[in-house]
Length: 386
Image (cartoon, rainbow, N blue to C red):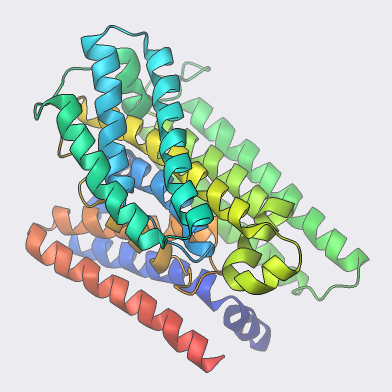
């Protein structure tokens, strides 16, 4: 028991939010009489929140460097407008329009990253200006009107599903095959990591703790995959989010770039003195955020099946809230990609659950605000305690 308490105490940011997600899901399971965990609702939960999770992945890197980006909601709308004009008005092939839109997102990141890193204007001001600039450009590009509909091939970015290679009919067999394959990979990674730590005489948790942790994780993954298999299988959006989680978790944990991002946010002066080019790090973090915001913009436009001037309104606050709820620190230097995803899921489960039980949008906003306040208060409490 003492081992479990120590493990929880040492990872309170990460485990606290996971426990909160489980408790919130359990609460809405009771309040909705189990509707929130039905296969159809779980699929809708992924489709409704995929673009927010993509934004959260980019935002967590920005916040780890000690900055913030208030413009991503407007970038989502602007990229959707570019895609709409290219595909609907100009008949540009979908694949080419996607490439141009992603490139536009990268250019937006270059623009904002330049002012923040090399001119020294605070990110709050630059991205606040970006919020107004790109919302205005969206209105100009769309002339205040919505463009619709997109072709089916574009809509599949947000509403497509992985085909069942085994032809399972009502039950999506390929989803379970992928789930089992993922389980085997996770078992291999967990015990390979443990073996390596033991070789270098690092302190590791008892074997039964590792077994229990991986067993609970695999149970959750396979149960979730089973629910998806009962509906239409794995949505394309989930594949996009999983790929991003794998890539960015690897980059942040195992590469020099990841260590430089944490060092820049943790203590910028010390990072400068140690030879890290912090301006370049911040610049590329904003370029990366522009690319991910563009991807989210394409997903959002595909889900709406239209490019509209009001798209992405307040999405920046959802992304920022997801990152802070997921355990990132306002001071920078702390945060994880997995934490941001868990924070995004907390917001998504709350939105979905409150809608299912009929809570109005006014109280939904108020409750989400309270959750954000509690999450940041929890961070400040831990910081003062340490």
